[in-house]
Image 1 (tube, helix red, strand yellow):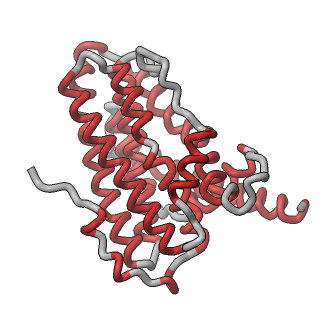
Image 2 (cartoon, rainbow, N blue to C red):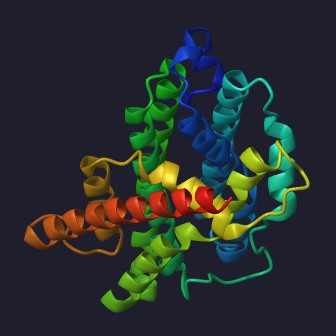
Image 3 (cartoon, rainbow, N blue to C red):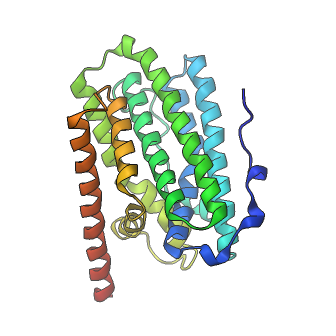
Length: 282
């Protein structure tokens, strides 16, 4: 088995401050919070799959790699912004956002459903870090995102492998698979990323500033959605279709990919208008 990369493999000495984009920096700070908080998700999965040692071993290894992603992004953010403390912001994030850990069964209705949802999450992160890699001109961040995007794709395949084990047991129908996949896509705009943006970008400047979910979510997503190009959305759409065990090639898949990019572009423009309106009101 090949050795997984570590922070020592990142060429930190190639950092170029002149290539740091402030909007990308804000997005990276928020992403570092979510990645570093993987231990909560591991505990949740340990509850759901408590008697499946094969999966638990894989989930714990996955959690270690996710936390490393957060550490790499956080270190880069501290280099790019010496006033930023990854540890302090992470502590604030964990104080204000917690993953529900008291459930002993999947909130998706079945273990197969849980593994579909995990595939959708890894689809989102793989496409996000691919888009971030392509959008950034800073060489160290580019390399970090390249490595993370590859990891996330392998994580997608990991959850896909275990889903196939549970598919025969739980036998989720097409409507159930679609409901879980699309439902998890919609959950991307829940409190997690909004609070991560707050903890990493707003709270350090003004700890007394109250958290406002709509405001922080808008400020995060207007920056994150601007990173995506058609190829990133095309790849993500097809990965989600595969997660739901639907045909990922052909005319319908092509239409779905084009429709998804149109939706992202429309959403991004709407967010820009909302940001401009908020600025005028302020």
